[in-house]
Length: 185
Image (cartoon, rainbow, N blue to C red):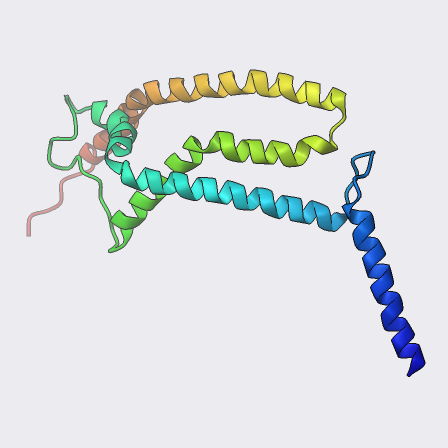
């Protein structure tokens, strides 16, 4: 029995020493694996809360967001008319939950885009301590070039989407006209 008591006492002492050692700041900035996992969990929770809040705001402001999303389709000129006022220019849903899921998906992606500074910062704050100064400098240059290029590409894609939709939808209209008429019954 004495060996079991000594083992338990030894484990407590070793555990206390390990806990004290992990709490002391390492001058080299190193951290144990469990510390990294806790840091990652905290960053993921903060990012998820931000995205969740953005999704809720996306649901609240669904009308204006939907107007922006559908603008390229409604401005496309198809078979001589444009706009979403004619019969057949409506969104087709096939399931009972599809209108609800469409709202949630649009709100989620709007929230993801709106909160991107928050979750990108959380990602950067987790990764940056492990980089050398030279690597950080290259990362700043890359992000400084990538953000304006991405924003410009997204804006250009949004502006030309109505022309692309018009072309693609006119292809299906031409294909349906070339089919022979069905025989009368």
